[in-house]
Image (cartoon, rainbow, N blue to C red):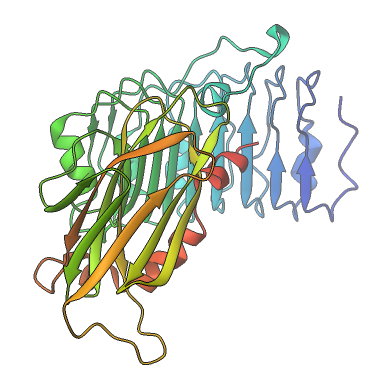
Amino acid sequence: ELPDLSNATNLERLDLNFCQSLVEIPSSIGNLQKLECLDIGFCSKLQVVPLSNLASLDTLGMTGCWQLRKFPDISTNLTELAIADTMLEDLPESIRLSSRLETLRIHGSVFSVIGWRVEDNLRRSGADIERIPVWIKDLQGLEWLHITGCPKLASIPELPGSLIGMTVDTCESLETISLPFDSKPLILYIANCFKLSPKARRAITQPSIFAYLPGREIPAEFNHRAIGNSLIVRSSSSRFRICAVVSTIQEMGSSSFSFLCRIRINGCSIEKNIFEKLSRIESEHLFIFPYEFPDKDGWALEHDNEVIFEFSNPSQEVSIIECGVQILTDETDTSRSSYGSYEDMDENLSDWSYESCSEQVF
């Protein structure tokens, strides 16, 4: 039981993680007008959460509240919301009023996604989110959407045009995804969702600047290909779209892995891109991303150059079985004009990884 919070008026952050005997948060929490962040992770008996008066509440995390059947009334000023392992089957419509919401994390069983083993007394037998409501497209401030461990989720409706990136992981029934019309290219991380329809796969790979999805066949537009983990092309263009097929060598012992791409031009090492903490995979996945050579120290691509792309996995838990490259021109590189610049993309990717998506749930 929590003490009376009436006098804690300057409190800005309240962490109630693993308060497993807590059944109710007292109504005196409404006096915390400066409270910005509330985390009620793994409060497995929690049933009552009175939050309607918290005008300053910016970030709310509800993970492992396995007896929570009714979503609390929340502040319309929320910018980040995480819902995981509750008895909720649908997103409550009150979220629709959160016009400032930028990041929404929806998780079913977090244990199934991150590979935790938990004791029987911590296991839950609750519901998973089964439907994403059509009104999600009305959240015009939403930039990041993360959905993991929802095995009954079969479709994702049209999303808002403000979206920058989306993670969908271990949603075994997912077949269809409706991306926003006329949107900027997206960062799309769709892992371990093996029922995707051909239409959904095309929707994921065509508009995206970064895509990660189940598959073993490199799309046709990657017309330079090689078996194995390296590829040589000759090009006068400095812009490319890169694809690699990764596969597990054995059952992965860790919950994530890293992916490394080294690039050389005319024998000189130019740069390496490291994508860290990618979710462990159960079968072959495609990894697609663009790259533009920077103009450094007066160097620029003006002639036919030999460019080598080499891929590796430092932990050696996955292998690269095939790779491909599409040489981009002004006609083919539609993402360049619609997104802004590759520098913008790199900034967004550097702020985003699977690890950051999962860590912030707890």
